[in-house]
Each structure stands twice: as C-alpha cells, then as structure tokens.
Length: 403
Image (cartoon, rainbow, N blue to C red):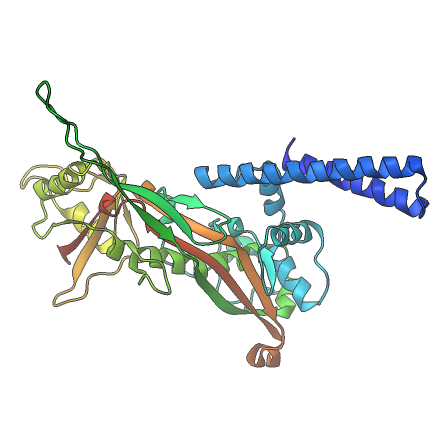
C-alpha cells in the first residue's frame, strides 16, 4: 500500500476505536477483545507507515526527485498566500497547508512560522515582481505585468543531484585511492597497494529574505498574486543560493565551486587548441564534462572568435563549444585585478550534490514598525541547504580570459 492508503486505513481504525470507547465507557469482554484487535491493527499500520516512509525517503535521496505521488499532489495544492494570510488573520491552517504542516512536524521539522514545500521555490515562471505597488488597479491585466530583469539561475538546473528532507549533518564516504594491478613472476608475492577512503560532508546553512506586502493586495488581488509572490521569493532566495554555489565562502554560505574545485585551465591565449586542451585535461582525470558556465560578456567573446584565422567557423556556434553547451549568467563575477579577467567553469555538473533540510519557513509579522505604519505586513522566509562537489577535480576553473 502507498503511504496515503496506509494513513487513510489507520485513520479509519482510530475512528472506529474512538467510537467503540464513546459508545461504552466500560467495555464488555467482547468489546475489549474488539478494542484490542483494533489497537493491534493500528500499531501494525503505524509500523507499515514508518517502513514506507523510510523507503520513500531513501528513494528521494537516491533519485533527487519526489517519488510519492500523494506528496507531490499535496505540495502542488499549497498556497504561499494562504500561509501568509493565515498568520495575518491569526487563524488555524486548513486544507492541504494544514495537512502538510502536520506531516512535517510529525517528521521532526520545527519552525516559527508556517512550513511550505521547497518545491514551490524551484519553479520559474515568466512573471516576477519585487514590489506590490500598483498591481491592483481598476482594470488589472496580469498577462501584461512587467517584472524586473534578473540574473539567470543556472547552477542547479545543470544536473546537480539533490538530497531532500535531511536531518543532521550528512557524511558521504568517498574512495580516495584504488588498488594497483600488478604483473608478477611465478612465486613472487603481490605488493599490498591498499585502498584509502575519505568523506565529504553537507552541513545545514541558512538563507532567507525579508520583504513587505500590502495587506490590501493580499486581500483584494486576483489569484495571480499567488504566482507573483511566489516568483519574487523564488528569485530573491533562489538567486542567493545560485550565487553561493559559485562564490560561497564555505562558512555562513556553502563553499562555492570557485573555491571547492581543484581543476584548473588556461585560456589566456584564446584559441581552438587551448579550448581542446582544457577538455583533454579533464579527460585525463576521467571526467566527462557536461557544460561550460561563464559570463555573458565571455559568451559574446567566444561567439566572435574564429577557430582558424581567415576561415569560417567560430569557437562558439549554435550554443555549443567543443560539443558542450555554453551557458552565460551574471551570477559568475569576473576575477578582480588590473585588469579584471573573465571566468569559465567547465565540468561534470552531475558531480554536484545539493542537500536541503526540511521545508521553507514562512513567518509573517503584521506589527513590524515600518510596514505596520503603512498598513502592510512583513514576511520573512528562511530555508536551509548546502552544496558540495563529490569530486573536486570534476571541474576546471579558468580565470585568465581577457575581457
């Protein structure tokens, strides 16, 4: 049975046992036997639920995607605006939001505010906003809304593995060295070359944002406000996470690729030969790269650079270079110096492991001094995650391109 079916059956048995006790405070021998049977069935169902939940969590961690259709369906029906309004109106949670919060708290997740799924903040839509001003005019046209132009979030979408719903620190064992095959003469002993192991660790690191929303907006706007609010939070927190995956300091934020990766390359002399040399160096350590990641200015430079002087053909054509897709984002800063130098990261992005702890905590403060005086509400969101490459040499960092 699925987790949903087990829970539904258990709820029916609990209801039956409660009805039995209510109908006869002093149980007859027959009633006591029936109650004991119901109790045993409930305990058995609880055991089945725990085992099913364990297997579900194990599958999510190994695949990096939700596999429980009930959970996915429940998450899709949750509204961020409802989570905010419930706190403004000081009322109990209802519907899918209440069910989700009860389930998360049973699993040990603690929060000051209302919990909403991480999956709501992993969707990107065409509309974004950072201010509520003016979006409830008499003739509101959601389809014509103009949002801010923001940096592109790319790192996670390039194929990183995701470990959701973590609890404590996560230690992943890793083989550091391998045994060596040896040819020997008859009667000669093999030399013990041994294996060595080390670990990589994911630790909870917290990221969040505080914003202000108009109470009138939340009460009067049409349903499009749900997507507008969600997109704004996605962009603010999502971009902070994406930036940390590149530039993170490894203390308050995750250790970004620019620090964690040990592979290097040079394109000080930009040519087809040096491009192929970078790919060759990765192949020599058994890395099959999946993409190039750089800044839009470098993308333009690559598009304008000929493979061979005087002959047709550019380094970057049809979105690819040396057979690998090239992505540009303003999230990747230039290397500061005199002059500044452009950067490229190339490697196997499936070697990145992203861990998330619990859900996203949404907490509303209707009494914050500034927003309160304007009739608005202050909303704080916090989430916890970390990132680490499984193999540091799976990426080459190039930091010497002339801008």
